[in-house]
Picture 1 (spheres, one colour):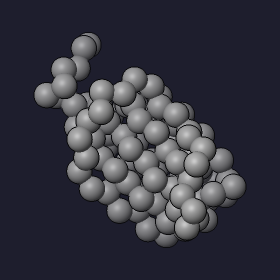
Picture 2 (tube, helix red, strand yellow):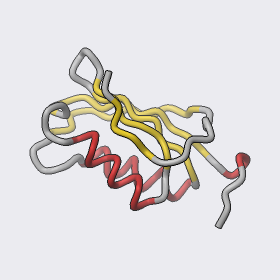
Picture 3 (cartoon, one colour):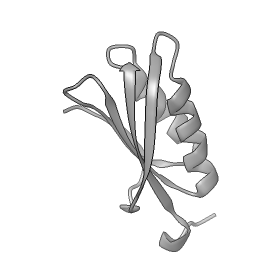
Length: 97
């Protein structure tokens, strides 16, 4: 199924807590790949992780739910999502800052 630009949504999520050094970005990337979403996750200097996810609404919601739970070893204390513009990305990457 091909998703047109008008059918894509995007969200920017800032996740705080114990989310660095626990494989969080790679875990979110795997969740996004399973859901068929695109985007990236990047560690921030303040200890948080910033995520941009885009794709079909269901795929984006799946990734946001997974990001709010986090992998074993992580402790998500806060996850704040805002609307974002789809960037037309393909695939999902765990970016380094």
